Each structure stands twice: as structure tokens, then as C-alpha cells.
Image (cartoon, rainbow, N blue to C red; front, top):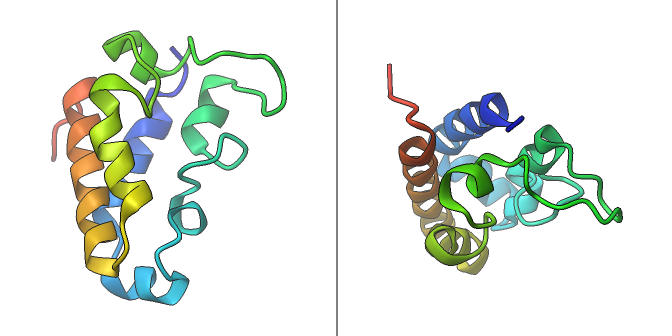
Length: 111
């Protein structure tokens, strides 16, 4: 597993995103955090996933700890909340929920 530090950084980012930042970008999660595309995702990069290569996600904490990719099974609910958010408030709340989910998976406690 290679992307725990990236996961912690992403949790911190998800929790710090403001409504103002979201309003400036619209509700495009890829622009704010790299979410939703393996070529821009910091977690994929940290796990060694090579976009357009046949690499799999075996080194990602999601697979190691939940036996599922970031957008499937136990991880799908928070993934879909971000993907489906239509308003800045929905997106901010979805980021917060995803951060909480990641914290639980990796055991990353708040200071």
C-alpha cells in the first residue's frame, strides 16, 4: 500500500474546502481535488496507478482495507455523493462525508 500519506492530505483538503472555493469552480470536483479521473487523482498517483496502462488498484488503501475500489461497494455511497452533487452545499457536504469515510478506513484521527 503506497498512498496513505496522500489519503491523509486528501482528507485534510476535503475538510478545508469552502463553499466559496466550490462556487468559483462550479461543482466540478475534478478541478478542486482531482476527484473522478485516474489521470488527476492524487490517490491513484500515490498508489502507482499509471493512466492508460493496465495497472490495477492493488496498492491503493481502498483495496487493501475494504477489498474494493474507490467507487465500488462500501466506497460507492460517498463517491457517488461527490459525483452527483448539483449544488455547492451538496458538494461540500459530500466532501465532508468522504473525508469521514476515509478517516474511518485508514484510522486517521483528528488532532
